[in-house]
Image (tube, rainbow over all chains, first blue to last red; front, side):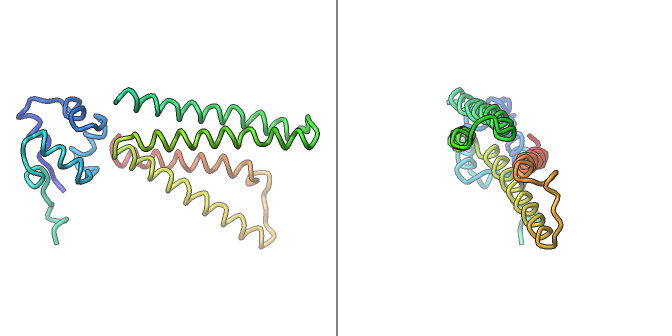
Length: 68
Length: 131
């Protein structure tokens, strides 16, 4: 699964710590999500989409290997 | 919110240290038979109480963690439990074959291995999620 969290974060000029605070996770946790090592729950994905004023689909996309 | 999470986390670590601090002296006292049997039984209950408190605090801290940290703890516990169960099973089956090494694999050591396996699981998990 790939995501555009870094891009959205850059648009808002937020650091990882800023976004982590907004969505209620640790900075290390957010880094893990942003780098694709951890796939967040629906709740967290929705929270992220809300703070970026976008949709979950725009924020997270399936990789070629994820889609079948 | 973030502060209360930290406090819960610290409380679980402190209660684990208290458990360790009670367990080791109790083992020493019981091993050297310092007291009679009735008193020894009462002393033996002390680490059980501190361990129960630790588990209670750990569960409270777990429920306050974010989902990435919850996953790390979950995987660490699963790996720790699975490896401990495997070791216990191996020792039991070897025991049935008449092979036992109580000097290295007694009940007390099994507990130490359980903690060791938990930390192995924890290290694997934090590496996996890049924490």
